[in-house]
Amino acid sequence: MLAALAACRGADPASYSARDPCAALAVAVVMPTSLERDAIGDALALWRDHGVAAFDAALDGTAGAPPVPAAPTIAIEFDAAAAAFHGVYDPAADRVLINRAIDDRATLAIVIAHELGHVFGLVHIAPAARISLMNPGNLVTPPTDADQRALDALWGACR
Image (cartoon, rainbow, N blue to C red; front, side, top):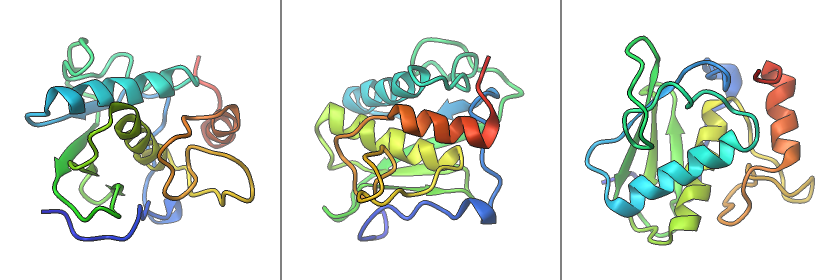
């Protein structure tokens, strides 16, 4: 069971090595439900639509491509948790933990995409600052053009 955390606590990027959204990154998922598998595919597509190339050549079959053996891997795990908990990125374990109780595909895709934003080094954005995928507790806003610009500022645009 996941720890009963009140909200996403994305790690401070200064304390870990964020993943380059332009470098190959494999996604590992153990026995996802069809909803979870579909939501992961949707989350990856949301980032692809905003210039992220990391998943193009390094998938484990979740979205149809063969894995790249040399690519680093991020695990996406689902487990039961308190209703207030959506997800968290654990950089020490290279994994994203998601609340299995989220049963809406679009919401689940947003939560996964949000945690992948932390994987890439993005931090929470106060809702008063701007609408963003990276707003704490966000369940509806996909990656925005401003989120893409934030990634580009950290890493440069993927070619």
